[in-house]
Length: 116
Length: 154
Image (spheres, each protein chain N blue to C red):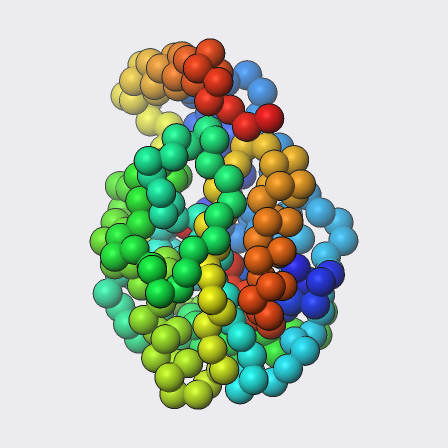
């Protein structure tokens, strides 16, 4: 899009992935994945994120420009343990989920459910 | 400390028994173009990974464009990888801020929302993203005379 003259900005929470992908402009909210614009029903936080996105579209003068929002999910960072956690007590369950996941993929392929 | 999602995801899929790690996009060159018009004169689009048509099976979903006049009350986010332990997606504005953008457009902050918004599937295949999905969205955006695109992946 950038090469075609459309200026872009990503509002996101997985910063390492965005940086590695070479994102032109990033508004980063260090929040749990699922609510990149701001906490659910927190209209002020969401408003600020959109303001930052519109600002950076015009202020960025180099690719990879990053604005880190000051927003926090909670006073502590306990939530950061939750996403895709691999806990000792869940290992058997995860192994089973993996088996089911691969079986579902096989079945989808057999049914022609895949993109060429 | 921010979460290292790449390491976290690799460890998770290893625990699921997958032997090969996913390879995330790794671009060394990043294009950047300055907006062609002032914000007041800009047409804005929104690109989301939230699913509009869950009836289409995930393995065959492609990028699609939908009229802004037909934004669903709730998108389907059940098949996306977000932190379902910590949070929820019951507030559409937290990932698809349509009310906020409409209000800004009504105030004249920018000219208008484009005719369409866009869905892009979270694809395992970078080839599908680069060669099929991205061009579909670009094509529609050019038809819609889009100046600015806000991408909001869940």
